[in-house]
Image: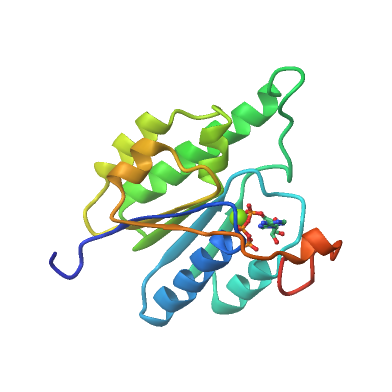
Length: 178
Ligand code: ATP
Ligand code: MG
């Protein structure tokens, strides 16, 4: 594969580290002068450390755009139409940015979740990502990656939980989890 060919990357699985891994890759990419964008499905209300860290690097180098409201209502009654709307807007925005060719790496954070909740169509998304401009790297994070996305991807890593402090009742830690 020639250098300069964009990869389609998926970080999935039940263990911790999917978003962190995407952030680590983004950090590495920024160091190489690549322009990076992370759009975040679902996330919106919590203040994560990476939002400030990205600002320190500069918006022209690494921009993070939370486009949710911090949670989604599913199960019981139907999915909230507001969440569907936000998801659709986030995908449309992310896709436009990927197709603009303006970025070298675009991270679609937690997109696998919203696909697995059937809030977006995995097959259509996989198709659109395959047809993206050639130089653009894309990372999709979240549990339960869609089979079509896994099939289309060049790199898929599944995080496996061996231990997580949460099972001992240890709650999210500043700087580690947010
Ligand atoms: P991180 O953002 O820390 O890399 P992640 O992207 O792999 O985690 P998500 O499924 O997006 O995981 O969940 C986000 C939140 O849930 C984080 O606060 C994370 O610490 C927590 N979490 C992740 N995996 C587990 C787990 N196996 N058990 C309990 N909590 C978890
Ligand atoms: Mg995550």
